[in-house]
Image (cartoon, rainbow, N blue to C red; front, top):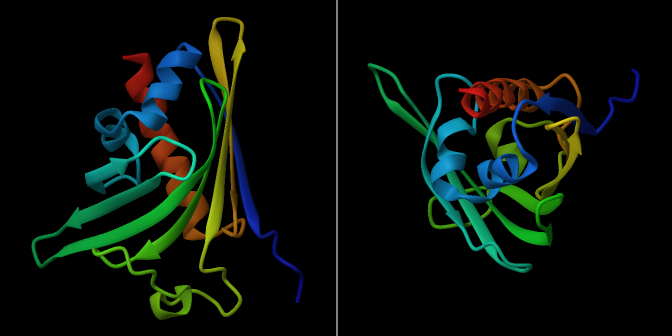
Length: 159
């Protein structure tokens, strides 16, 4: 069995200023508009944007049969406006209690705490955005969700 890469790296060039893209990551109301895969909404995005501050996000999907909520909690590790943002992320209960990934059907060995690194740079009047999510394997639903979210982000910043 081949070893699966344990991180996802996605680069996009967005037709927006670096300040606008930074705001999409750090302003809770803007973040709610694009985060998550297609079909998911973000009713909660609490962000204490200081090093050591907590971020707590809820993604929700409503179907005729039920409402499915997924909560994530993390801590900001680095904040270098407007070029670098690093935070941890874990699945959690609504109250913030971390849920072991295996309880959510993830394979054995999946870390309880992952790390997201966002780097932004200006590129000919546009913004180059690179996101690395350490602990989310390539080819998983996590990678697909990020790509769908970034499609929504790109559409939002160019309209």
